Image (cartoon, rainbow, N blue to C red; front, side):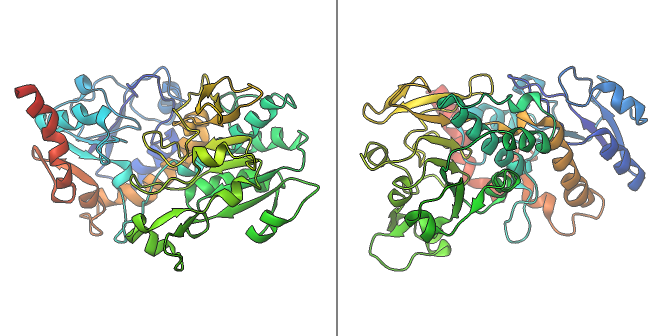
Length: 407
């Protein structure tokens, strides 16, 4: 099998890569049947020369590769027919902006696998950048707090290399005794906790968080059963919520009335109830001043002050709860919002190294063991010009625009 590490073609450019030089070199050593070429790139965090120094081939000629490996969506006109591609396609939730990409994969007879669809037999994701989204998102949230109150001006995460650099800068700052609420228990939330604990922020129970006052910054971590409740008053549980989201409503207002900072690291399924509503935000009892929305679900999402995604270049905006509209982040009445939707891009070296380790350990072996655990089979969205059975629910999404064009 010949593997091509492709350059990133999406704009704005992404500096991450799936396989770092030492990881690709190690993979070639382990698998005698594997050959590889790296497409030249002038934006990749690891420059071409670093691959060459590891004895790897760097060439623009990738048309003879069997598998083409990238991070973000490949531009439609760059897709080579009859190949296998692996990248984050952002199509499996019927994302409108990538409909043409999915259609192109079908028309060009491309076998499409998605990093997001590499799951085990229990449908648990095997690989992702969630940890790094949490790390950078938490840092950016505290950076927003410092800017809002003119306490400090931290360097942007994109100018730093490692998580330790972020923590070092945060530990040098003075923080008043703020309360921080963190939603979620997955990789994103755990990444945020790495920053919180690195800063020596004290973790407290939900009960104490809601009732007690502190002389130092504290945080509490809450899950589905804490920020949602059953409408009928019955006992809430994570399993029940996932099975019956329509039976639930938000139970977050008690945290909005206690927390100064909200870091959102939860998973949100479209159609679930809102978590933080505009009514909560406009309440005279609301205490939230900064929202770091790492999850960043914009269209009918769970956090009403997240009116749009922000960018690495312009990471902050303000939400005026009285007017229910966007204002400048430092407006006196504003709740400051950080809602960057590509946070791991700000820490490309750490993110690439961590992601690549998992890819080599958990994904790459499936190409050489006959896919005995069906990892590749579960991840395959399109094959032989058709959607696979697992992703057949996307057929109406694929057909919709084509039908409109015919009409």
